[in-house]
Image (cartoon, rainbow, N blue to C red):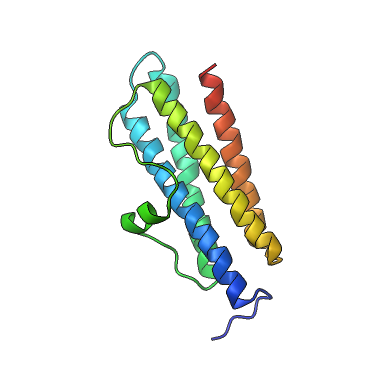
Length: 155
């Protein structure tokens, strides 16, 4: 059945591509945050273990929202490690860095996600797609706030 939601097929595709990038970045950051939650050690263990858990739970919930918006635009959401590796701008961590390096990597990851969400917002705004713009704004706010909180630990 043809979709007629007031956004052209070309624009829906362009927006879905931006959201797919955001989904891949968010999922990669989710995995990294969960990994660090499990493996953090040192004097900040309790604080970071708890903080990382709150962060990966927030990220986990955002994944479904992003993927469902892609589907609402009539495109399939990426859902494999191979697709995420191809789409994500966030580098995976295969080692176990010290806690300060973990925090620094997560700051970088949240800043990347904020930039990716900003690009998704731009695409949505150009196509008059308010639901995606709202989603992207919410994600920018969450990532920018989390990056600020993490950066504060390094001062």
